[in-house]
Image (cartoon, rainbow, N blue to C red; front, top):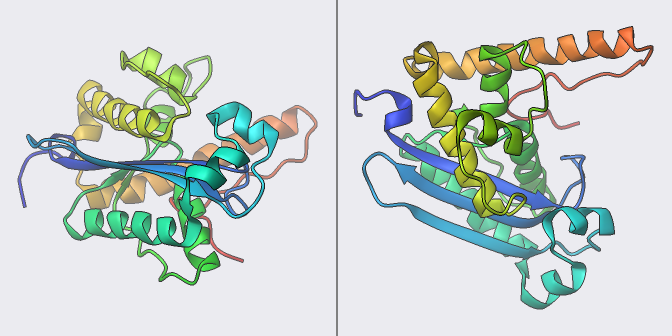
Length: 231
């Protein structure tokens, strides 16, 4: 394997658009996987998916995909989920970390979809999550931590937010910029970075819970990363 730092090697950018904010219940409506970087040409694919259920109006308002369009143009969910999961397996088998913004959401969505459609579950490999990295390296920065906000902060162009393709590529570029700006992140071995991100994510969740309690709210936050444990 190349001795180059992880951000200079091949990366697998991944994003899904879905039917719901709860990743355990959400169905995939659109997905994008792109193998990028490493001095090679990009290799990308986008799926438009018929989730088999109505797409709520509030979800369509975000990503622009209606139930009618998904049914008319989308691939059956079982076939799409099989192909998407195969692409992720291919990436991990070839040493590519999967880059996804708020990866716990996207990976939990695809995990639950594989279970829903009786497709072999993914064995999660290395993951790079710009959301977790940014909150760790710049903990006290004020403002939002959305993908759009991170793109603005790190100088990444995002055209067509909430399109799976645009979001996936932007997340990979943000991860690259973080690794360049904070050499201690770029220099980490993937095994060590995986372990660190899981720890940082749990610490960030605990900090958010403390904030909620100070606001008089009894909220709990998921601490599992990069995948929520199945019930």
